[in-house]
Image 1 (cartoon, rainbow, N blue to C red):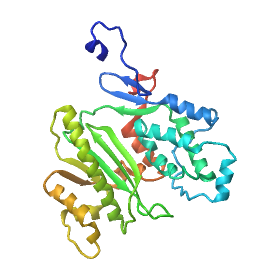
Image 2 (image 1 turned 90 degrees about the horizontal axis):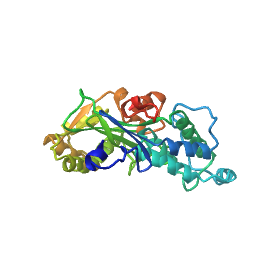
Image 3 (image 1 turned 180 degrees about the vertical axis):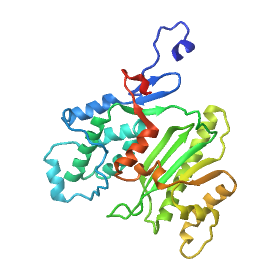
Image 4 (image 1 turned 180 degrees about the horizontal axis):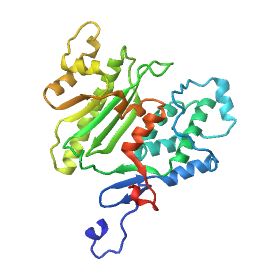
Length: 310
């Protein structure tokens, strides 16, 4: 339809691929998926007949730096660890937000992988074996359309047992469609869960400045104050009533920047129950309940033979 409008005399069919992704377009939604890449990775690992697993990583798994002996044991497999994490990263960045945390966690060991890391890489591909038809769904919901971006930011606290550094996860929606997500280690060790949540919110707010400008420029519109969802009551209290003391001096710059935007109605912050925190599965090796929550909001079954899933 788009090609016909742009080139009336063209016999070209509607686009069905975009930068290596399958593209399914109908009147109410757009679906993006990468089944070919998933099939390629599964074939390279000889997992065509494997039993699928339900989560990308073993829930609550803790991975540690490989010993020299463990690394040598992995090298005997004659596998290129980075090839498989690289393919996972390509999926996570484009159509599979449910892979964001696994990719971030597994890629940490690209330089010196061990057998435990490799087992989790294989585990992730077994998960993809059972979810290969899932893809990103962009489908505005009439009852949820708002004139502003909605963010979910969450974090673990001292999740990495070796470095004690927390991991942040964030997920942005516009008109109820997932448009941006990430999972990454924080830059510093935090002294409390509130400080860890503050880092995640601050990073999300900075990312949001660019995202807001991009949407306003492309759509020629003016967005309202961005709504941030958090699940830490202490952080919300700090934004409303921030007072500096010896224990919070190091938080002053980030907290005061957020509080100023909060007071000036440039952003809104809303407390949500942890059970409804959409970004939870972007912070760790999440349980099935968190994975399903993310799948429900961001993904759908997409295949050329089942366009109704779009």
